[in-house]
Length: 153
Image (tube, rainbow, N blue to C red; front, side):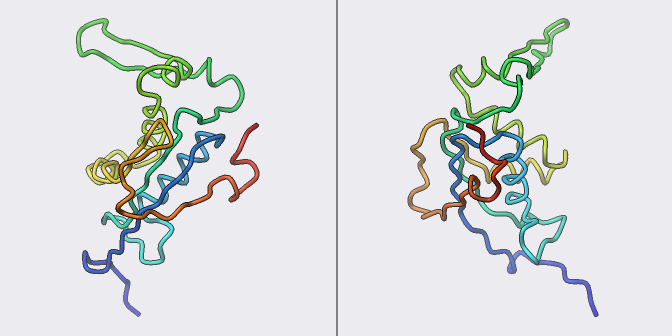
């Protein structure tokens, strides 16, 4: 018995559409990271880009459990001494780019290497219900019905 290793000819990429309205952020991010990485496929190979292309819509209507909307802090640094900046999740979600909360959650669930930076190019996140990938005819993945804990009212 030989170990199977996928080649670029074996890779079959699909387009997945996920509606993030009312879905808990961490649960959504783990499902997206699994789909981007390709771990849901039986032909998974760790060093290859096996995953699907994922489109996330309604990222501004994501849910956070507990008091995370006010207590979760996102840090960034300007590169200058003393240049650390911070924003809460509420500030980002109500700001100009609310899709960054989903992007950061998914990015931090992927391994920190060149492959994960390549995988992040397969993720497209939109704040509203409109997206630009209608031509790819993505199949809808209903995250809400996967588990009752995935949603929060």
